[in-house]
Amino acid sequence: MNYYVSTRNENVKATPAQAVLKGLAPDGGLFVPDDLDSLKVNLKAMMNMSYREQAKVVFSLFFPDLGEKTLSDVLEKSYENKFDVPEVAPLVKVGDAYVLELFHGPTCAFKDVALSALPNLMTASAKHEDFKDHILILVATSGDTGSSALTGFSNVDGTDALVFYPEDGISQSQRLQMVTQSAPNVKACAIRGNFDAAQTGVKNIFRSVDQPAPGVSLSSANSINIGRLVPQIVYYFHAYKDLVDSRRIRIGDEVTFIVPTGNFGDIFAGWFARTMGLPVGRLVCASNENDVLTEFLTTGRYNKKREFHKTTSPSMDILVSSNLERLLYFICGSQKTAQYMEDLKTKGEYQITDEELLNIQGIFGTASVDSTRSAEVIRENFQGDHYLMDPHTAVAWGAMEKLLQTGELKQDEARVVLSTASPYKFSRSMLEALGQPERDTDEENMNALQEYSGVAAPDALLSLFSKEILHKDVIDAGDMQDYVIRTAENCRR
Ligand SMILES: *Cc1c(COP(=O)(O)O)cnc(C)c1O
Image (cartoon, rainbow, N blue to C red; front, side):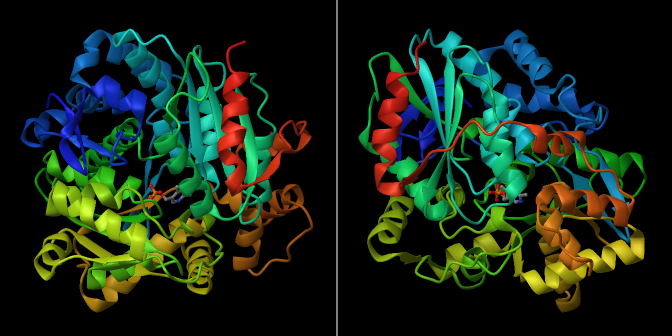
């Protein structure tokens, strides 16, 4: 693999370092590798490696220009002592399935796996490209990306990070995780609107603003950045290795992964792992009431003109799923992808062909699970196996059960449910699901959940409530661009 190309036009090219620095392609497309064949790995060799060693193999294939030495440094900085378990992503047996716990990083959501690495990848890429501008990272968040990005970029030289989050629809702890960030180079701002408004605003700024201030360039830490996706590929391999080590499977057996999905980033990392040679049976896209992806994967019609539901799994409350564009590119090619994206913009929908749909369905399964069922799943798993899972993970678990019932998933095939957040990020919903009374504040809820479940809450969340609130701005989505320009002017201290 030498270049990344835009999903909307193969002639728009970037080196890996440039792709990480830019985030979005200049034509509005997303960067994808120009050649998938060169991304194949030696699976057997991967099975004898630690998490960090597997990461080294994956990073070297996707960012060959950065060189071995730099990538080793990037990985050491990214994962050394950042996670509260040495293996980064532990695999836990629950019932007759497995849960891949991705929430052991500093902000207790799976986004930490990628956002611990992205800032280091970005500074390494800037150095490699001899890029002198100060980098202003723009982020739209449905809740978890924001705190994870602000933590990841805190005090990283040559960068500032600015996060836009929906004023309503995220939990109190999620908000506190952002507005109490104290590093001088990071900032959070609330938007009157939902996640899609924030994401559209950020995408528009990338398209219309070249340089927000002299000597300042914009980049993205959303999963539209290829540097966000690549670190997520690693834990699919690592989970597979854990299944081999525990003798649940033999090398070559297929494993199904069930992924609670919003922006299609996490699950698309699984698609890359499969493309690289990991024996993946199915990738199951689990949706909540915002089931735009379930409809798409079932009918081939993507229709964003629908009611937006606020659910107990807010990080999946998304109607425009950006990374799906990457899948479209590999299934339909750049010309049709560009057309579909144009249709989505102008008509609010697009329809792929039956043949394209069949190709996608050969790999991806799907089911949607509402908040009521998700709450039942939480209760059942706690009462049955004494396992406490967060509402996003419970949506995925519920989707798995649906597909076992229909026979689309087989009982005897190994199944891994990706667990994307600590249950303590959503203590209020957890108590409600467990039939316990809710308290007034998240702090009280967290303590009550701890007392009831006997499962320890992470220190990173318990310490939130004593911190000072530093970011108080609330703006209309239409004012985002001005806000970015003002932030950029103050960037270079
Ligand atoms: C972001 C997030 C998701 C969705 O992941 P995508 O990569 O956007 O599909 C699911 N669960 C949690 C807890 C998240 O933070």
